[in-house]
Image (cartoon, rainbow, N blue to C red; front, side):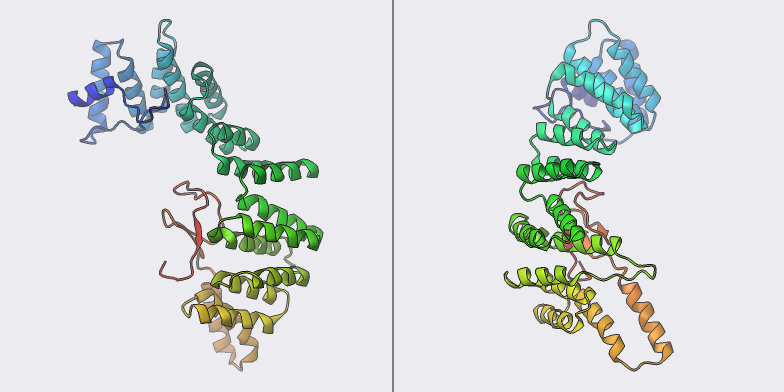
Length: 369
């Protein structure tokens, strides 16, 4: 324990570019957090000037959910008239995290701003501010701070979120174009343009933007454009009986463009999907069969072929009921997975909700993935 305390006195920062960054938790090798709190409290009583230990003790209280005691420690440090500026900045920074953890977002903003005023553009502070603004739906400020961090992907992402929240159409388009300029591979921005073109029936613009999008985004993210558009149409075009039809002009453009590119499993699948939902069943089956030639284990294609073929079969009502039940259950299989942590989702995502990785989504071509 004493060796661990000495380590704290030397400083615990792992990020040399940050003056305020500190490890979350501060658990000793034994993981005996309660013992650590007791020992640190004793040391603090005997040496009230041990600022590093005060900060560590506050973090330990926070790790145990005792946020009021953590906040009290930060405030006591900040109130010291002769406290070194670096330590004061760290105290404000940790106080911001305490308030954020407690859900008191306005005070968290204020605390981070105080730390920012002392240190300037410290990366740890900028990162926390960016995340906090994103969590409180102030997307333009989130984009601003990710820009200061020189992280164009999240900066572009939150510009698109700001565009979606904008009331003015011209301002929305301006933000989307800005996001593409900042990060040309911003699949979120290209997807929003495609959805707007579809909703307005601007097929010339739709074709142009789809071509640009497919050439700009990473190859393993191209399916996100097609799946995102499909989900948008399904959400906004359903009738009372929960059926929907894709505009045949949309299917025509998609098949034309994807046919001109190097053929792959996913492209063939989405050609079939858009053709199927626009009422062109025979052409859809042809593309599904192409995808199965590429990979016989590609389960989404087999599911769609089964669905199309049901109307051609003579079945008893009992068999039809059972088949319908199993196909409906099969459609609930989560088709998308995070390449980093393995999280599975039915809908597309841009930021993994578990591991917070950007653009780590992939299509589950095999059920064993």
